[in-house]
Length: 115
Image (cartoon, rainbow, N blue to C red; front, side, top):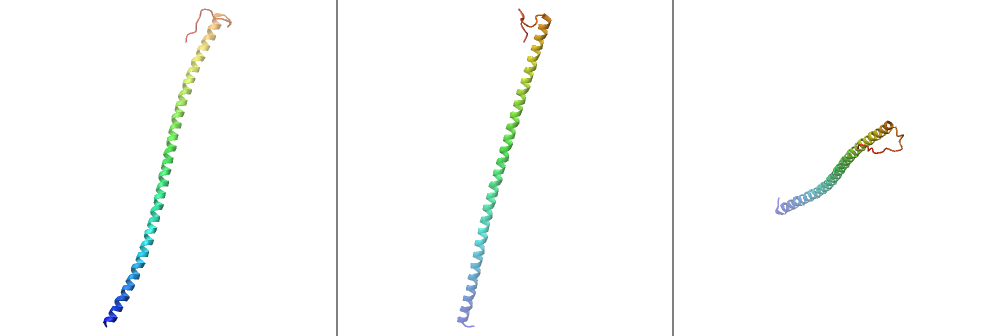
């Protein structure tokens, strides 16, 4: 082989190597772009997941507040029921006292109802 042929062979090998490197660079760029796209999708999915978690937390908080409100309202109802029962007992005592006094309900003189 002559020097000229050696140079031509090395030049051909360099050209082939250059094409291979360019193809590899193109493949690497495509893989990088796919990885970036996948990472962006993952970030979006993570953000959606965080948003859903926050919404679930908000719903749990709302449910807790509603439970507290219902408990408070039940306590108010219970108190009102006790007060109503007390008033009912007082009215019954007054009616009994009126019947026993023979006053026919027009006036009670000098008597006070116990509270």
